[in-house]
Each structure stands twice: as structure tokens, then as C-alpha cells.
Amino acid sequence: MKKARLATLVICLLALALLLSACGGDAGDGRGDVVEEPQVTAGDFYGCWEYEEYDNWLCINADGTYEWYNPDGTCTSGEYTIDGVELLMNDGELFFALDGEGGMIDSEGDRLFKSSLPEVWPGAVEEEAGFTAIAADFSGCWKYDDYGVWLYIYGDGHYDWIYENGDGYIGSWTFSDGEMHLDNDTVLYFDEDGILTDDDGDTFARSTLPNEGSDPGDSWDGLDWDSNAEDFYGCWEAYGEYIWLYIYDDGTYEWFGDYDGSDWIGTYYMLGNALVLDTSVVFVFNEYGDIVDQDGNDMYASELPDEYL
Image (cartoon, rainbow, N blue to C red):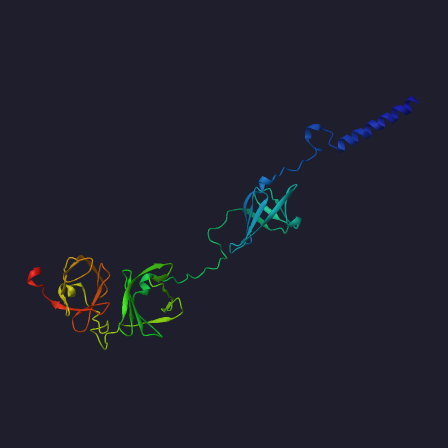
């Protein structure tokens, strides 16, 4: 009996030894230990990733959002979640996992690497630079296509507006965002085809100023548009009136006689071919060599009476 029990014990011990051997019973060799998976956190996914095979970029943000950039720079965005070692998007339809080599792989098997957004998008369509007019484009003489009206635009911020009957006036302009704004509330546009258009849709064509008229003494017809400041220097006398205007070469003028203006002495400047006084009186030459103002008042070259010398 004792021998039978002993034999049974030996058999159990042998079985236990075999079991321990199969499980790596030697604690020193490490066999049989439980292998733990590496720890992955959301922070391991943060940053910009670029596909190896495609011009697409994926930016994963710490706030649980992402941006997906296309080759042309357009972007879609959304939210992601972390599930174990995977980053999930679109309710799990698309997921990413780290490859253990510093890269990332998506659920389709495509690889991504750490990168940054490009300065120039490879698929961006280069837009043609739009035409923008500058003030110099407006300069010169224009005539309405459908009206007997001329417009001469000077580069110093002024213009001449001249009607077919010889009447006209001088004004100023400002320029902003490719548009010219006249002080008579007209807005002018210049397009890439060289066409000038006002804010009513009426167009202008390049032209020359009118130089003939039926009654130059009473209007601005027949003006000499090639005059300069030197042509105005000296003394001018009003027809049939005891009034003289002396224009000096230093940019000043002086009235003499029965002139009833508020300023007897002042300054002037040239506006194209016109001489403009600081009182807004404007003189130009007519075909007879006289100077005429915007009201049709003529003055002829003369000399000051002795009493004013």
C-alpha cells in the first residue's frame, strides 16, 4: 500500500515538473512572462502629418479636432477620439495607428510621416492678376462718345470740363481703388481695354480739345491750348473798363483800377494751359491772343497807367 502511494506521489511530482518546464518554470530566463503592449497617448498623434504617396496633410490638434488639407490648400475639419492605440475619425470608419518607427499608418494601409504645411500648395490654381487702373491711365483728353463734351484730366489733380458750345469749368479729382472721383460727383472707370466709362455707363474715347468756335470773344471756343505761364506774364486790361491785371513771374498777381474783387493781390498757378487765380478766376487764351475767364470776360495785353507805376 505504501509503495503504491509513493508511486502515485512520484508521478504527480513528475507531472508538475513537466508543467513548470512547459510554462517557463525557470524564473530567470523570462519565458512565460506576460508581454505588455506599449502605451500610446493622444499626444503621440499631435502635429502635422503628410502622406507619403499623396499631397495631403493631416493636422491633429490637442483639443480633439483635426484639419485635413487637400493639394489646393482647401481644408475640411472634424473631431477625433482615441481608442486604445488607435485614433478614430468619422465614427471609426477611418483610423490611424503609430507604426513604431516615428510614422503613422491609416486603415487603408497608407503611411504618413511628420511634416508641416507647405508654403505653396502644389495643387493651387494660380490666379491671374486682375487689372487695376492707376491715375496716370486717366490722364489726357477724352470726349464722350454720345455727347459734345470734352474732359481733359491733368496729373496734378485737376481737370477741364468743356461743352460743345464752348462753356466749361475747371474742377479737381481724387483717386481711390482704381476709380477717379470728380468733384462734380462723376465717377470714372478705366478698364484693361483702355475704355473710360462714367458711373452712368457712358463711354469716352481719346480725343483732342476743340480749337475752333463761332464766337471766341464770348466763350471758350478757339482756345490756345498750348499756352504756358510765361505767356500770361505782364499787364492785361479789361475791354471797356478801367481795370488792369498784372501777372508777375513770381507766382503772384495784382489788380488795379476799378476792380471790385475782395483780393487785390494774390497768387496763381497753372492748370494745364489755364492760369488759375487763388480766387478761382480762370484765364485761358483765345485765338486773338486775349485772355478770357470762365465768364467770357476778355482782357488784352496793355500797360499800367502812370498813376499805378
